[in-house]
Image (cartoon, rainbow, N blue to C red; front, side):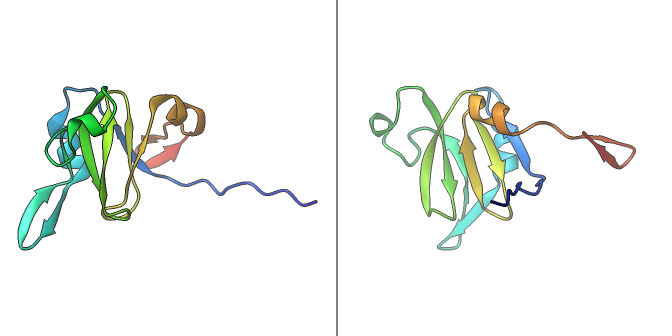
Length: 110
């Protein structure tokens, strides 16, 4: 039976630490709804009803591909794939599957 390996992909990601709101809102960007610009990353309760999420949720992220808001806990990573395609990954999962790539003098190295 042949075996296959996923081709390596580069992604952009940032971790929510509960204090880096400006970094998160800049990373996640905005969307336009009925000619109104709206943030994709907001404090919990802006769109979701807080008691419908986990008690640890501190923020919510609009995911265009799903056309819905998802909850974000402190320590979660947000991964960006393309324009408006964001994914939430908890810290344990992120560490198992992804490792940082360093860039030195415009050259990527592992």
